[in-house]
Length: 150
Image 1: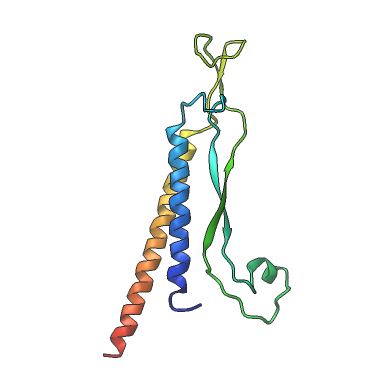
Image 2 (image 1 turned 135 degrees about the horizontal axis):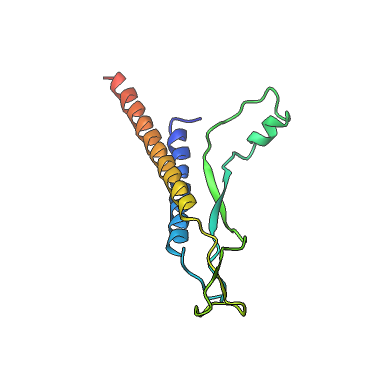
């Protein structure tokens, strides 16, 4: 890995975790949205990540034993490949006066659990902080390397 490889990997983590926090914030904002533009209750969303890898080497190939004796670059970062939708049914609440109630008087609420979303927000925030710390450590090491020549 080059001198700036750690910064590049951490920067990809910053971008990914920022997207994750945006998606979680959207879930929290729609915790009471019983009707979207499609006419259905809001469905929880989540980010799908995958590791960034070089063209010639990847972790799965190393684990499969396809690259024995070859070098392996670790820490190439992460990237978001999509935003998934959790299609599980939300909680049904009896409220026949609600405009979104079905024929039996039940309203389907969004499948967003505020406690789980807050836990996910905290983990995303901590991961973001860890990536910032990684970048700061790499910058400090580069600065110290420059000071050696003085």
